[in-house]
Length: 348
Image (cartoon, rainbow, N blue to C red; front, side):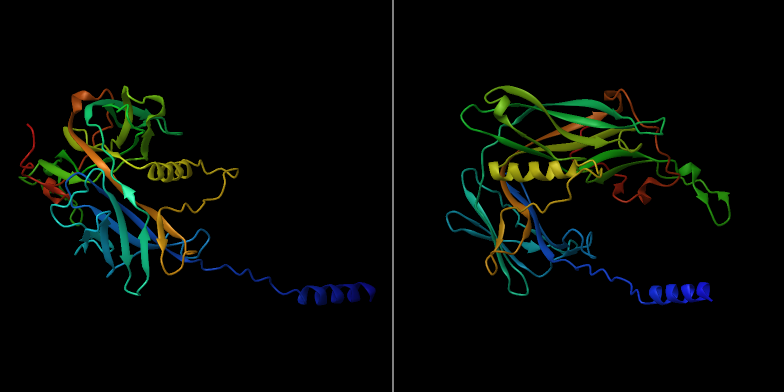
């Protein structure tokens, strides 16, 4: 009897326990601004989007902001209107012929379709030394559990740093083109499981935006007024890019000190290893503010910079290690971004 009573009391106790509901806030949808105008040829792009704060149920979801009015104003009052791209929602482009002028300051101003107004702090365009030379260096990266390492090409920029000013540098890659080799003779029809060789074509020229695998920035505290060589880009070998010949443009920018600090913080956060001892991702505020609500957090940074660009061709013989060539059993023209005719300015 006592044993039965004990079980009844135990059941009553467990029945009175309600599940604890954890309320997870949705998080604020933050305006994110990404853009750079410079002294080189355009068009220059400003990209607007909405992203959620860390911990939000919408974290990782990026929504382009369309229909906004976007202008760039210089310190003399001249206004340049940007136009939203037809096939690039949320990206706004400067008109043909626009170039930022060395010595001038520029401000980005945005008005959304909801009527909210945002502005950047002024950014001054600094002069930039030219790229004297580009060195190509093969880099291999061991991969745990794999016999074949990752590899790629590191570009090293040689510059003569001016002695009369404190310089801050930022590097990006332009659009790249490489000779794409495929195997149309190996074309295979999956439905019938039969080999159906194609007569054409085995060699194309593929255009792509490879992008840098990291942020490459520098300040001249340790080489002011000297000639120096600085790592400026890394292009990963995917088994296709360096089978024959590869071309890209290395773009070097002289940015403001504030822009350099922002990029350095972004780089530090991106380099977090991901262990439990790492700090949580922090919100890095840039130079954009809301004129309607000064307390609103706006992400991203509007930069204005002087640009120096240099083109480089990389042959397969320039590398001392390459990935196993990838095999595409089809006409090379079926690959996105590939065409049979070389660019009009291709250097044979």
